[in-house]
Image 1 (cartoon, rainbow, N blue to C red):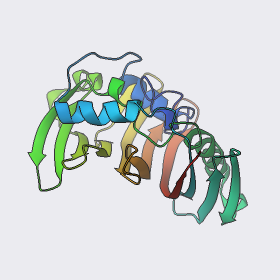
Image 2 (tube, rainbow, N blue to C red; image 1 turned 45 degrees about the horizontal axis):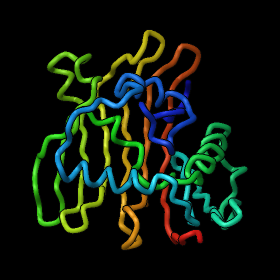
Image 3 (cartoon, rainbow, N blue to C red; image 1 turned 90 degrees about the vertical axis):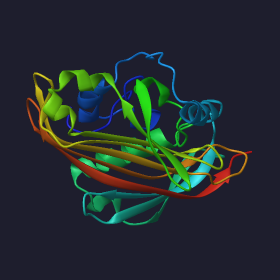
Image 4 (spheres, helix red, strand yellow; image 1 turned 120 degrees about the vertical axis):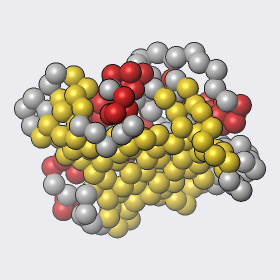
Length: 239
């Protein structure tokens, strides 16, 4: 597996469900079952709202940037479930970038693809770090930390942010700054996974508006190297 995405980010972040090395990483980070730990009320409420809208269908524009390459802008029409190219040349991407674009289009256009309806199984425990004027900020744990020595566990950075006013999730971040081996055939030197959300419609949960994924390392047959950014905008409800 040579890219940071998976059929199921643990029990599965739906939008990352099909690609490669993220699965090797996150199969270690999060097992394939709900962990059953009670979560703080703000986290539980934010997740519950998203879960109640797990089949939400939308039209939206997606801006995709692979590494430092050109931006590709595509519009998804949720009424007839078709994509339309607005700007950029997908043919200018390298092979890995074209594959990632194709996979991302498929995943993000699925019903519920832009809400945080699949995150609960990936959070073993959430601890409040701070409260500022706008947000509750939590650090969350997952089973992979038991596999790190104490000095390495400090290299794992996680953040989950919840808006104080409307109760919606605003960010979900995992960053690992330590080389590790999720299995005997894969070495990960860097891992970064960030999703940002905004409440676009008052009657719907926050929608993912930005994402950033980066990984570097080595697999059994090829290097692992991935970096891409996503921007989502111009949302419309599908009747």
